[in-house]
Image (cartoon, rainbow, N blue to C red; front, side):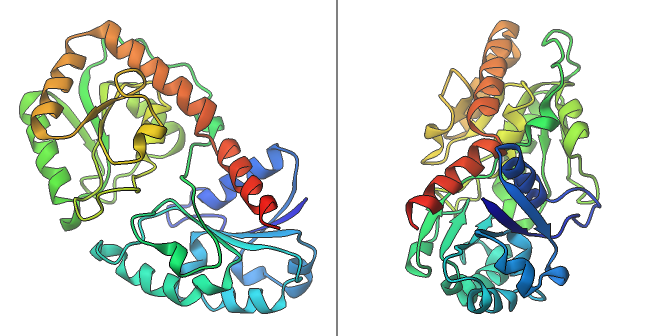
Length: 307
């Protein structure tokens, strides 16, 4: 199949975008893929494609008008889909502008794939499927460090925003209990790729908070896959639906309240063998079921079934 992947190639940190990572996965499983940036898209390029997959950069205001143009000028037999990786719900204040754009352009897609199903997107587009993100296995093709002697108790990576007040309260509780490494409290400090993997090798436990209380089901951050893939055992804030992705007390440990979070954290910190068991199982599940290759296969199966 000839696939056109419409995405910017670099993010604002100069790193490869998730759209490119997904496109590479499409190539890896045997498809011919043209990765095209928005400014370079032409009708000729578009009409060579058997499938057009756009990514999150399409809903930037400077690009959003392309959705209608693509829908009107593509081949009739070429599905046009969007795969969007972030929160997109009007109750989540910092994503309201994205919701507004998405509501305007959702009708132009033959299929909308989103990680966030906390909003009824199926009412605004022809077809909708919740499809989570995943990890680029190439970034995880490294040996994990021994679980003995890790010098940091807990690691967390993520920004500090008003919308995440519950997250900050949890992190403060953890910081009073043990040593905590918080990368991203200053938004200019981020780790990705190999640096992310290596940062997690220094910690005994990875903390994965639930999404804000206003988004109470069917959405969680890609952080869980990224963290679990490192082999560091994950303490995860439970969100309905997530149990289909990881087994509680085998591949991760879920918590539903502050008391349970503290109890399970103490249990992990006091048991090296348990940390190793949970960490290894979570890593194995991630690299088996939650890679871009796996997600791309899911997307293509859904698209081909609806042709």
